[in-house]
Image 1 (cartoon, one colour):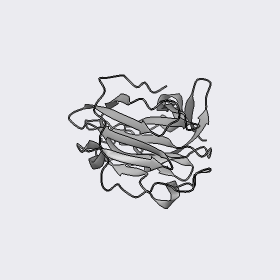
Image 2 (cartoon, helix red, strand yellow):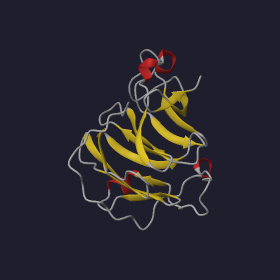
Image 3 (cartoon, helix red, strand yellow):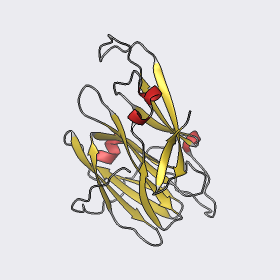
Image 4 (tube, one colour):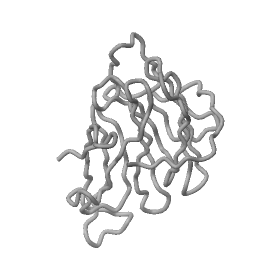
Length: 210
């Protein structure tokens, strides 16, 4: 499971006056709530700003802020409106966050928080910091299995991942390298992987679809 390393809590941050609009295919209706907050995605610049970024889902709110000071950074998530536990989450990031989105990938009416991360260096390896809301009560980490558990998906992989939410799926795209390709010139096209959010034995898991 993605490990959130507990660090000294950062101050709760005010929301930005504007946040990026979510594309229509990543917007979902939420059962049991009459009105929905418009801000469900934010950019890397918003995440790295001193003010951070606020995302909303009905009566729930999430303030996100990610440092961008080097190859290792910190992510802060401050939830509000959860009925049981609104504790601040602090996590280490292997790289810089370039976007975040709220999305209901399993159709249960509650959102997940998906923060897209790209590592420093020429490989720009992608990773994900993700958390699911548990029936409006609390949030827990979502596990993204490493690519080496899927040899066919790993074939030709040398980083440069980009994540996005498309409808009910988390999508991961990256260039495919053939033998002899340089890091700057892949020739194998682009591979797209799709994941669904499912309950696992010990928490939420992003399941790679065949």
